Structures are given as C-alpha cells and as structure tokens.
Image 1 (cartoon, helix red, strand yellow):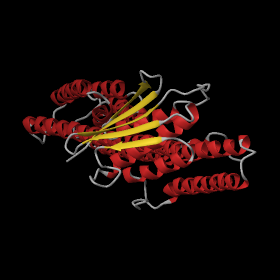
Image 2 (cartoon, one colour):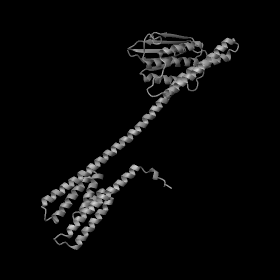
Image 3 (tube, rainbow, N blue to C red):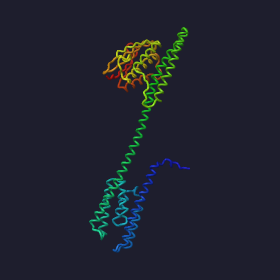
Image 4 (cartoon, rainbow, N blue to C red):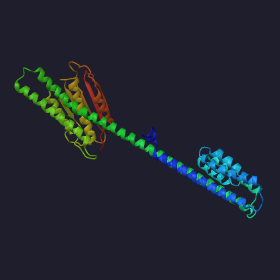
Length: 394
C-alpha cells in the first residue's frame, strides 16, 4: 500500500534531487582522488616530514571530502572553514576548491568574492611556507590565480543558468495561469452573451404569447373565428420561440468561424408588424432609411438597433399594454444614428416584476461594445423613452 504523500512528489523534483546527489558524489570523488595524489606525493617527498604532520594532513583531507556532502546546506561556512584549513593541509585544498565552486553557485556575489580572497590567501600562505622546489614560485601563484578565476567563473555561469531556467519556468507557469484566466473570462463572456440573446428572443416571443393568451381568456364571448385566429397566433409564436431558442443553441454548437444568420435593422419591420397584429399601435418614423434599406449600416449596429426595437416593444407589452408606441430613427453616415422608442402613459401601471431592467442592462452592454450609448427615462407626458445613440461610419 502506497503511503500518503508519495503521489504528491513531483517527478521533476525527484529527478533534480537524484541529479544533485550524483553531482555531489562525483565532486567528492574528484576531491578525494586529487587529495590522494597529493598524499602519495607527500609520502614520496625527499624532504623528511614528521609522521604526525602527514597523518594530520591526511585526516584533514578525509574530513574535508566528507564535509562536502553538506556543501549545499552550509556553503559559505563550509567554504571558509575548508579554505582556512588549506593553509595548513595540502590534501584538503581540492575540497576547498569544490567548496569555493559551491559558494559561487549558491551564495551571493559578495560571499563568493570573500571566500575566493580567503582561499587565495590560504593557498598563498601554504606555498610560501612549503614551496615547490621544482616549480618557480611565480608560476605556482599564476596557476593558483587562474584556477580560482576558472572556478568562480564556472560557478557563476551555473548559477546564472539555473536562474534563467527558474525564470523560464516561472514565466511558463504565469502564462499557464493567464491562459486559464483568459479561458474563464471567454467562457463568462460567452455565457453573458447567451443570456442576453435568450432574454431578447424569448422575452419578445413570450410577451406576444401572454397578450394573445390573455385575449383568449377574457374574450370568451368572441366569435369562434376570432378565437381560432388568436389560438393560431399563440401556436405560431410558441413555435417561433422554439425556433429562436434552437438558433441560440446553434450558436454554441456551430464550428468556430461559421457565419450564422443574425437579425439586422431591416428585420425590425417584422417586429413592428407582429406588435400591430397583437393590438399595439406602433408608428415608425425612419428618417435615416436604415429599416427600408435605403441606407446601409454596419451589421453590428443594425443588430443593436433591432434589439432596441425588440426590447422596447417587449417592455411596452409588459408595463404599458395598449399604449401607442412611436419609433423614431434619425442620423446620417459619417455622424451617428439615433433611435428611440417612446410609449404613452399606461392606463394602469403594473407592479415591477422580478428581474425588471435586465433587458435594458443587456442593451446598454450591447451599445457600449460598439461605442454607443443608451439612456432611458420617463417623458413629460408620463410615458417612457428608450434612446440609443450609435456611431455611423461613412
């Protein structure tokens, strides 16, 4: 049975831990090999050296190599201790160089320079006290200096490469989070757009159903022919409401980039005719000629005008049934187009239903998306006006 938390270990982190331990073992092995070579040379040195000094040197070398196992946890402390010990022990010098490399990789630049200076001073002190008889002192000091320079440069390059990799990983993670946020925002905008479409389409159709169903309820003494006609209107609008709903759902199922038919400004004439058949007196004054096709307006603006007429007539049937409605459209290309829906005062103002105003909020959002403005409010005669202003490119 797997223990709790084993499945939470990132394979990448586990691989990095294994790689670090392999690197530690290799560096410790190299330091031990170089230290062993130095110990053999000391044993074969023609200059006699006390046995206890050799033993202390070799012990220091062994302890220095073992201490490298903790070089990642205490890089600066270990670097200072080993470099100071290299002033007295030749076999610990390789471990001190590895510690200097570790400080350059994991420590700060200031700490790296400090440990490097201490190491140069320690090895210089060792060379002055026990000089190499076969090599000129200047050559030895040049080799020591170049070795330290190469060690520090190598360590700094490793540190910079790791910082770059960490930065790239952070950017990748940030890009992934940003992509998720964009996807959520796109989905939210799609849901809001779908809600607006369903409100506009179904609200209009259901308001017509309500009017004609009310007529069937209160006109029971009407001739059978009139009642049959009203029932047919109810059936037709119910059918068209289902069609409109299928069209909205079709927008979600349509492939990306596929053009779907959407209503325009000319389709507002059909809305006006339906309202007249339902008993609403509607007067249209289209001085701009956008509903008759005399002047062309961009599809996005025409669709927004269509939604204005649709929402205005729907609200009249809900809140001011039986009142006359005036739809006025003015403007010219290169300036702007202004459309307003005005109705008279209702005979019996209805109570404000739940969710009232959602259609106007959606219409205002539509107007803002195309750089327009929507305002509404009561008229001097007690009616209501909804006005839409949109830019009209030439």
